[in-house]
Amino acid sequence: AMDKIDPGQRSEKMADAIKKAGEALAELNRVEPDSYAGHVLAARIAVKQGDLDRATTELRRATELSPSSAPAWYDLFSLRPLTPGEPPAKETVEALRKVHELEPDNLFVLKDWLPLQTQLKEPALAETLQQARKTLDPFAEVIKTNIRIDVRDMLDKLAKAVDDEKWPV
Image (cartoon, rainbow, N blue to C red; front, side, top):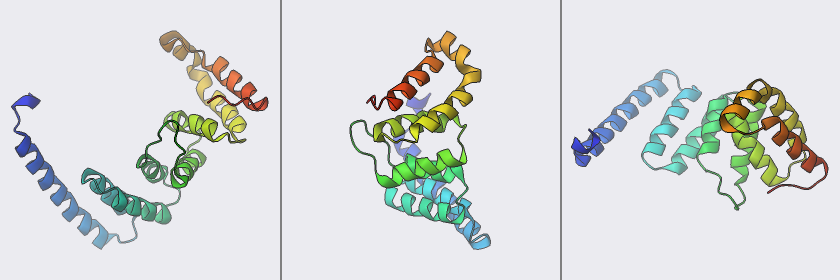
C-alpha cells in the first residue's frame, strides 16, 4: 500500500502536520510557559525537521524545568546515539546517568546503561550489576528459554570481571 502513495504527497502532508503541531505548541507555550512538556514536544518537532541543535536546546530546557522527568532525560540521551569504539559525549553519559537514577529498574535504561558503564570502566558498575540482577531475576528463566542466554550467569561473570579489574570491552 505504501508504494501507492506519492512521495511528494507524503512530504507535503508531513510539512502540514509539522506546521499544525508548531501552531498547537505555540498555544501550549502561551498557556503554560513554564511547562517542560512544551519543550519536549518542540524537541520532537525539531528532530522531525532534522534540527538536532534546536532539539538539544529544547530538551536541556525541559530537563531544567522538570529535572525528575526521566523521558525528557532519555530523549536528550537519544539525540546522540552511542557509536561503538568512540567515546560518548559527556552530555550523553550524564543524561543516561540521570535516567538511571530516576528509573533504576527500567529494562530499556539498563540495556543502554550497563554497556556504557562497562565501556567507561565505571566503578559504580558493580552496584548497577547488583541492582540489574534483582530487576532481571524474575525474567531470567524466560530469557534463558526464549533467547538462550543465562542472564544470571552473564551478570555474575561481568561482576567478577569488574571485581578482578578485567574489564570486558
